[in-house]
Length: 297
Image 1 (cartoon, rainbow, N blue to C red):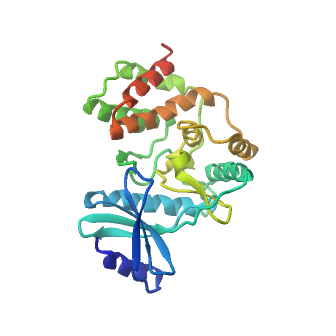
Image 2: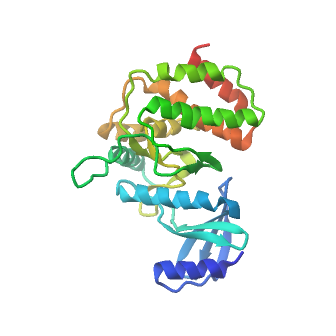
Image 3: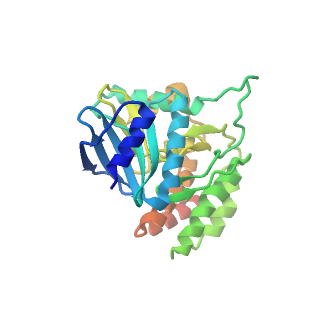
């Protein structure tokens, strides 16, 4: 790995001389290799992958930048990205993690609610975001995530989320006998639900948040787009529900709407399908169980 090339780019971007004196692997990720680099004073976190995945890092940096612009919740600042040798990389702010009091959960819920309520304003005071999607495609793990601007939420969720993942899963040998029945049923499942587009994290499970040493909650590894805010809340329940103070803090600022309990299964199906496409295995049976639950048989 050409660490000098990365160090030179960090120097150019930050305006402060940086030379890599130490680097060590950081465990925890299953998609990218994580590395800490330091010059003895400053530290940075580096994500590494094959060169062909550079656009994944470009879109992640763009997502971090937009989420940071909301000034609602803490995220690591992207520094620079590129290709060194045969590997793509993304340089991020180093975060010193600590442990927090139980009140951190409530504060995180409140901060997520503020993110979901955030609306960028134009000079005339109108929001530019009246559709679902994003200004570019990004990734969810290594899987492409399609974000075409779509006025109707049901159409967006069918075509850009569930059907797209189902097609990939079937190409990978997955067997989902009730898939077409589900796709036909989604407009009924979402009938009467008209969410306002919210900027969402997009991949908010327990492994993508932490607490800074200052006690401030921080989120990372986003896959953002403008969508139904409930997609983030649903995912906080997918791999083990967050502690109750999180939901209490969220509801203080942005109470949940009727019908969320049934919609969350549909929203989490997207992520379970993606896990099948990434990892295969038992996720096929979980997908079929969720589809059967949604269609009521």
